[in-house]
Image (cartoon, rainbow, N blue to C red):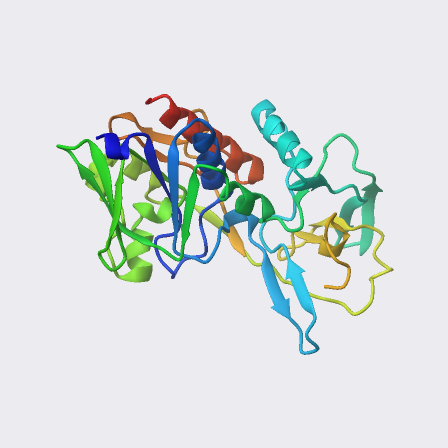
Length: 317
């Protein structure tokens, strides 16, 4: 038991078939646990963290690098615990306020509406990209990040009171006292539909969780990334909602964000499955599942869920 004391695995995407799902919630949870003296190992099948904070890099035919925040364009804060974290990230240069004009565009009148300065709700972005915060949290002292490593199976060892993790090819990834999953597909039939394999977590181990995670409705969306040779001077705002449209929702100028160079997709959960608890928690097996789908479909919801998962696990020791 001593060799695995206070060891927690944070699991993102279990397959290359899915987008990177080591979400903001998982990275936040890992960082808080590490600061509380817990040894954390992150497993993610993709090359880096993604989820709602995804960023895309493209190179033009001329060799110019283009960078797009194709996940969440920004986030705002109302929760006190989240404020504490954001202030710390701001002091470290990981986030900055996006202080620009915002408004709305009416597709019927073809006019911009309500253009004004930020006002009461501050908008924050990661610097130099939205995923900068996730990357920094995955490099905290006490956090070991294993990207390119998918978890194929999580087994509960009843006699040892531990979790055993195995990779996609059956390799032993270690034993852990607790597990945090930031991918709702970990027990979902969708995992089998996409990969042809059983989900990493046997639903019979956590029947209460499985019921809540079975069919979380999602609202699909696409991100169109466009680069222009010249600034669009006819547009009077750097970000705007699109109203009276069945197709478009939001548009923003990424190069106007702080820390971006001027020279260079996802789906939102349709419901919240743990609004009061803020994460799913199986105390006897020390298993937490966190994500924006637990609280609210935005960055703040993901952070709140990650904080809650870390609190549940920290209380075990």
